Length: 268
Image 1 (cartoon, rainbow, N blue to C red):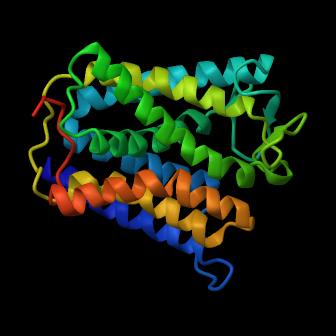
Image 2 (cartoon, rainbow, N blue to C red):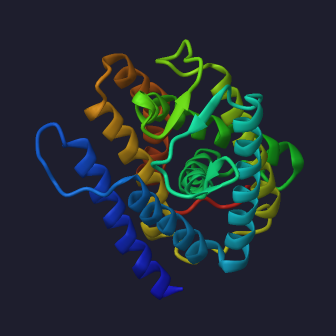
């Protein structure tokens, strides 16, 4: 797995640079990537990091479960408005399968994986081998992931650049219904992942920093939203919605586990 880890480090550097470049756009003009290229680089990082830590088989099952669940929920959501509220996608995110851009299931996984690792770090040492632990882990991961969208969605949907809320909403133009859909969608994905990952991890580099890279990416996104959001209120939301789990997870990695990967829970 060493070649994968080398590529994973390179992709981490690329993702970190792109996050930083976006964060400082108001002060320094650095080369950036558009939504499509950024998503492809980020999802490649998530896939390769997962493969380096857990092997290709687990990664493939996790990715396929994520893609199928998120695409299905999005397609139902766009057609009916039941899942996330009434919305539709613009043509700026590339070709569509049905009513949903092909890029969207990839975008879900690029966020699902780092949020999953953050939740697993926070629950490290808990017993996540049995159903109560699997369910609790899925719930923590779903809240961690939805916290990301609480900060991201208002900016990404502004002006209909990526998707359009047809009737607006009470939260910066986003309907509250949307966040219930995020919790339900990600909880289902994490429930599947938790059941698949309940066996012992293949974390053969637990004393190195590589396993913690997704945690750092999540934290970098939180910092970016705090630094560069145009809405002061959303900066405050970013501090406590994404910033709190990010801070706790980074603190646990740095102070408690020397950059170790989260292990599947066994009661201490």
